[in-house]
Image: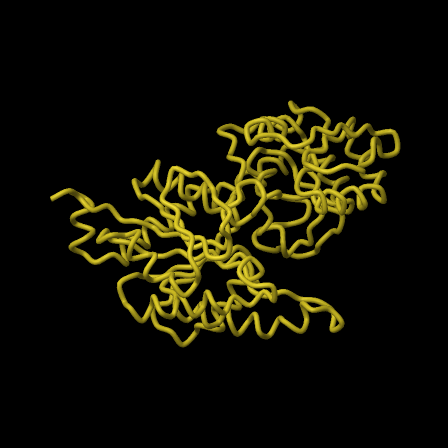
Length: 369
């Protein structure tokens, strides 16, 4: 009888490489699990019929069909589910109630352990925004999903604390805090800051880069202070500036993963427009750190957030001067080391360990032999 290796069924709202953050997280995770741990992934897509060619089994179904779909994919193979939870991916109001109901049916069936990576918990906003009025519904739905999980993983400490409060009475509930990994790979070696070009990289979706350039327009003294000779703009879209106070902006357009990684490997800085409490869930921030570029943000922050400190792993206008005086390479090294504690290998290792725990012992034995 052939060995039965464990299978991880990843549940996602859609599979759109390069156009969906959840997709760009799930596929590299599957690749790492397969290449390092010998664990195969399959994908169930619940909210899109758009086809995606992968080297993995992919099934498209309605949420109500999730259990049947997972049984067909596993076909007697030991398996567990990993749901990628990002509310707006599954529902226009950000409350994935159909996903919650589907996972409840899977849990009642008892044949699959359930894990979840919570990319988001709930939206927030002013009382006149829809995010404000939907937030309580979103939290109720996320709480229901959390109650079904054997393993919960999330990206920022604010989310982890919320999950701990909601599941405090459950014995054996595992919660792991893992900031996101770079979706464009990780440099094997870090080039020291002063051996890099005096370049600041800006990349991401058009809206993300528009916010970044708007902030940089107000922070041109920072560019001068850091000695920036040029800015490299990477991504789709038009209407971005050709220069900022004499600093030329070179528009590269959309680049492949390898080309983008090469740009970040040689850029001294990378700019992004994110508040401090969201940096650990930004794949852009992760990519800068994973390639040794020093992340720069507009707004300083006084306290440690998710293991990050302004002036240590990240710079702002308030800390750039001290960093220059003490040596920029310290920031590059600190960001690099912070990232290595939760790179893609650590994520994959977390799920590999969990899968071995939750698969019945006789099936694990078969997988090992």
